Amino acid sequence: MFKSFMNKRVVRRKEGVSPLKFSPADKEETVLEALIRDISATGFSIETKAVLSKDQLIKGEADFPFLEGQLKFTGKVVRAQKLAPDKYIYGVLFEQVDQEIKEKIEKYVESTELDTLLMRAVKRGAQSVHLVVGSEPVCRIDNRISHLDVAPITSQEIESMVNSVLNENQKTELNRECELDFAYILPSTQRRFRINIFFDKGNLALVARMVNTEIKTLEQLRLPEVLKNIVNKRHGMVLVTGPVDSGKSTTLACLIENINISRESVIICIEEPIEYIYTSKNSLICQRDVGLDTLSFTNALRSSLREDADVVLVGEMRDLDSISQAITAAEAGHLVFSTMHTYNVIDCINRIIDIFPANQQTQVRVQLSMCLEYVIGQRLLPCADGKGRVVATEVLVVTPAIRNLIRGGRIEQIYTYQEAGTEFGMRTMDGSLRELYSAGLISRETAYVFATEKKQFEGF
Image (cartoon, rainbow, N blue to C red):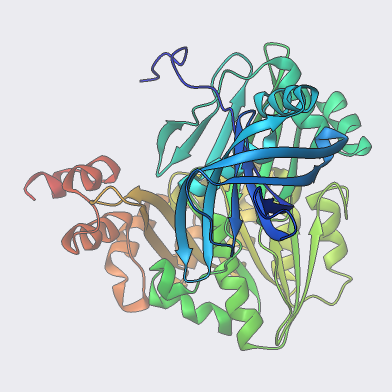
């Protein structure tokens, strides 16, 4: 439940890094250096190697872009913390400062900036940040909603935030389409975000989803061993499916990086927007941002057939054209990776077939039966200890028997083969849930909620 935010404290301190030169008030000839870490209308905190004492007076000056001039002050040390043998943090209260400068600082810290909110969310370990006019900013941490202790966002504030991160082309597209997706890098941390801007009751709204810059291994993600075999595939289609925020992009990045390290290939990634940034290793990787480097997934997929690619990653197969082009690319001898938003692997196969007109579905089943290699379904579930999330996976390895089922339209029978296909590395979601519960990684309640056959978990 959302609690009333009217009694929440308003942010009155802003973080940042600015150089400072200062002197003890009784030794003005001694010039010391520090970094201002945050500032408020009443003072700031500094990081320095200098040893200061409580209640000691210091004098100094610093440059802040928002002041349009220098901050000259006399301040008193009110708190101290030792960070390392030669590094200290001090809290300093203003004793003397120009009133006009103080008013500018107060106006600055009372405003809300996107970078400030994103930095707070990063420090809390959040997965996303949500900004809506008239509501207090919230973030999602391990699938729980948490408030950021900031006053409700005004329409002027969110317009200012949006204008600060968009170029003119993006502004034009937002006004034309009434929504916009793009990648954003937080300057102070180099953390990447996938941002969606849209309209809510005539006002701008914003959701920023964090993208991990570190590409993790199969072992770190606790993904099934059978997926290591994908690196040996030279053509076909590998799909990762699941609901929003189930780690699909992370799994794809892991698989692409595995190929990047293990073999010589030309890899073309088509995304909207680009999330993970790859460094070419044994493979050469090109990353194309839809809207920036290409007009659409369909155009980029069609073009990849003429770009001598061995591996093609399609961020999402979302419509008839992109699905059709992805199948064509797989048939042409490329190894194609992509994602879909479906509940499980069988729904994924049905979605692909059903999106085509009825008179084409027989042919599509034949094509899919020949090019499909793996379908990976996944969920991110809360850990039993309440700290973090763990992935539950189901894997369909497309064997000759599975190909026959797809070709013959007997999709509903796949689950039985999936249950019995452990020798090929197949697993069901229920099997993954049992493993996670037995290992103490998820609770019985979580396993029961996400189970397909819930009776299996009633006796646990």
